[in-house]
Length: 149
Length: 389
Image (cartoon, rainbow over all chains, first blue to last red; front, side, top):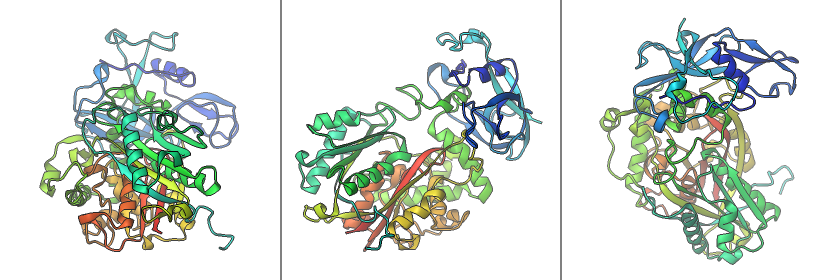
C-alpha cells in the first residue's frame, strides 16, 4: 500500500506536475530565489510575485535513513528495511527534497555527497482503497525516487 | 540596578514543582494528569488554586486545552492564558512566557504544565492519531517518513558525518544518563546499560539504535511561577529564572536552513546567557532536551560548552557523568527517566538547585540550564537559566 500525497492549495500544482514527471520549483520574480515547498511569499525578499520553473532534477545526497521498522499505520506502513534519501538540489544549496531510493534497500550504496538524479514512481491508484485524491482534478499521482547520477 | 540589565533577569521564580508517576499507561485522561500534577506543585509551594491566575502549557493536539484545565481548576478570572501549539521545542518557551507574565504584572501566579499519554494514547510514532497539522508532512508521509526518530535520524547522519561522531559517542550519552536514572526513584529505566548493550540493541532507523531513542511516557509535570518577592514567603526556597531566551523557527523546508549540522541553539545561546549575565562556565548542571542521543552532543556545542565537533569526545571522557565537570541530564533525561516533553528537565533543574535531588545531587549546584528541543528538525526553541535564590 502507498499513502497518496495530500496536496493543499499551495502545493496542488506541484504535486500535479510531479504526477506528470516534472520536478518544479517556484522562482521569485523579484529577487530570483528559488523556493520549495510551494508558498505564496518569497521568504528572502517578501515578494508575492513568482512563477513555476523546472528544476534540474540533479542534486547530491545530503543524508539518508535506513528504516528498520514498518513506520506508519495501516495503509501507510512499508515493509522494512527501506531507505529515504534527502537530496540537496544543484539548483540552489538550501533546497532539500526527500524521496525514495532506487538503489539498495539497506542503503549500502549511499554516501553523503553522492550525485543523484530525480526519478518518478507512479502511484498505483488501484492500490489505494480508502483515500481520496483531494486535488479533484487529476487521477494521477507520482512520488520522487532518487537514483545515482 | 543598571538600566542595561535584562528585564527578565531574576524577575520570576519557581515556587513549586510537581509530577505524577511516570508509566506506560496512566489509565486516566491528560486532563486528570494535568490537574494532579498542578495540585502537587501548588502543595509543594504552599499555595492553593485560589492563588492561581495564569495557566500555560504546550501541546500538539494531544492533551487537554489550557482553558479547559483552567476551568477544571475553578479559576473564575483567568488573567493570563497560553496554549502553545508546539512540541518539545516549546517546553521552555512556556516558562519564559510565564516569567514575562509575572514580571509585567499580567498575572501573579502562573501554573505551567505538560500532560501527555505518550505511550497509551497518542504515540509520537503516529498510532492513535493523524499526522500533526504541519504542512511539510505531505512531502514526507508518502515515503514512509514522518515519525520523530526518522526525522532526527536524517539530520543526525549529516551531523555525525561532518564531525566524525561515532556510534560509541552516542552510546556514551545513553550510558551516562542511565547511570543517573538508576539513582532516580522516578525514572522508568533503572537497570545498568553497557556499551555492548547499546551497540547490540536493534536498529530503529539508521543511524539510530533502540537506545538512541527516548522513552514514551504517560505523565504530567507542573511548575508554579510567581514573583521572587512572593516566592520568598512560600514553603520552598525560591529558584529564580535568571534568564530565558527563544529563537530559531526554521524548518528543513523553509529555506534559510541548509546546514543540517547545527541547531537553533546557536541563535539562542548568546541572548540566553546575556539575559542572565552568565556564561557557560558559570553553569553547574545541564538538563538538555534529549529525544535522541545526538541532541545532547549538538547542544553541548551549540550552547557553547565546547567547540563544534568536540562534544563526542567530551561525553566519552566521562565529563557529563555524575562527578564530572559537566553533569548532563541528572534525572536520566528523556532517554532513561521519562518523556514529559521537555518539562521534566525543568523540574530536575529546580530540584538540583534546591539540593533535593538525592543520590544524583550535584553538590552545591547554584546555576542550572534546562532546554527545549533545540529547533533541530523544526520549531522555535527556548531555554532557561536558573539560579538558586
